[in-house]
Length: 72
Image (tube, rainbow, N blue to C red):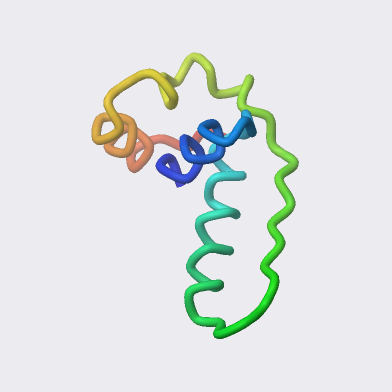
């Protein structure tokens, strides 16, 4: 989910970690479809997670921390 959260930022969507999870799930589901339109609603702002280092710290470190913390 952290990786997808950063991908969203790359395309101008400053969303939170749960939004990254939603988009990751949508992408995984889309891989199994031959032809379809996949929609994921993102209603989580990234501002709540600024102090976590989710966008600035090393990705592996952030993923490791996320596996031990509950952000919401």
